[in-house]
Length: 146
Image 1 (cartoon, rainbow, N blue to C red):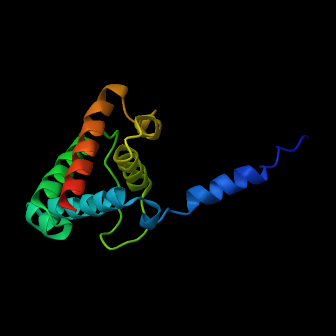
Image 2: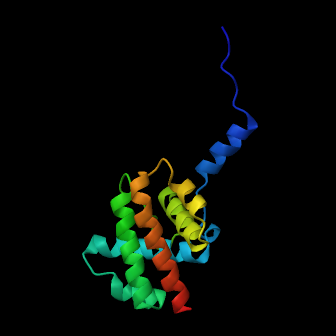
């Protein structure tokens, strides 16, 4: 009988990387703040409260809070399944949060190609423009608030 091939060291490294959740510090400032906002929105939705007042207080701007909420709703409507978020104070990212933070950071750098690469195969192509526009609007609001 022949033995199945042994996984390569690259395969072991890839599996280990997938098993280790990324940290929020791996994201840029806008992506990281959006993940923070996303967790806060999820927490408020669970208890049936409006997240905008606390978002505005924590993010320092009503406009940023509104743009974050609009982008969160766009992501929720576009995502293929329920978005998995980590606990509010946790420094580790779920795979969904890592992807969302990365595409927000790509939009913050105005890197449309990377943005589309992050979402390719995950969401339908016709849903990408809404997320792109939402991420750009959030970025612009963040920059105005500085």
